[in-house]
Length: 379
Image (cartoon, rainbow, N blue to C red; front, side):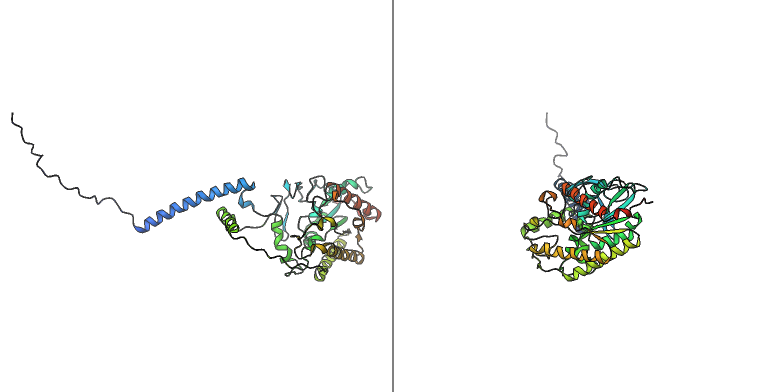
């Protein structure tokens, strides 16, 4: 049987014609697509960097890099930062509890006489926990007075100088209607000694650092970008900055002494106007620990070898103001034989033992000087 030829076998196969219905991306759209991929990659990297920072530091970067306040303090328009009412936490090397009125310590009692304690970290009592501060110990020492119960109010805040103490007393703490005001201050004023930008309000030598001290500094958007943070860290390792040590001075700063004097007089006037009695407490420092320092970042323009001399000069100013303003001066805290066990690892902050001794000295002084007679139940 003959094969029948296939009529399609000899038919030529048509050439493949390219499809023209598939759209092509323009150069601009390609760039937008690549930019989107890059942004997605950066977003993923930023999230990863935030997670790494959280693991390394125990908190997210938007909670801040500097400071030790750890949520115990909150921003304030006039005082940089104040204790956050009701806050509790571990901050400044101690367990801290802030009462509902915004002061460190137990709740204030209605009708109890009030003793107001002003100062910085040595009044707030950095380094000790709740129940161990010298204001709380002083309250125990004064229990059983004929005037009735006494609340010793701890209005100290780390970093506060006499400038902040004036603002506290004038705008906030006067409302407590205290019978006695105790001011324990000096070292934070010494911080501004010989500062090249010293002004009567300590604005640039002290004030602009205070928000960072309390960990309440307002931060711009760039400061919370984790990739930026790690990029800067890498650059510092590649090319570390060469810090320049500031020029230090051995002699007391006479301009600072007059600013300190003016602030003390303002506090004396405000106290007298409120009908309260004023007790000025000079700054106590443990000299052997100061001698171990080559340089002190808290008082950068003071020669460590002259810290005691310059601190004594401010204590002398306080003594003179006490005499001029008919206030009491606690010389006993300077005469007391303090030991290293009275300090919490540095030269100025009391340990729990030091707080007990401080409270005993102040209680004895208040009773001996008759200042406790100014205590009476307050509304």
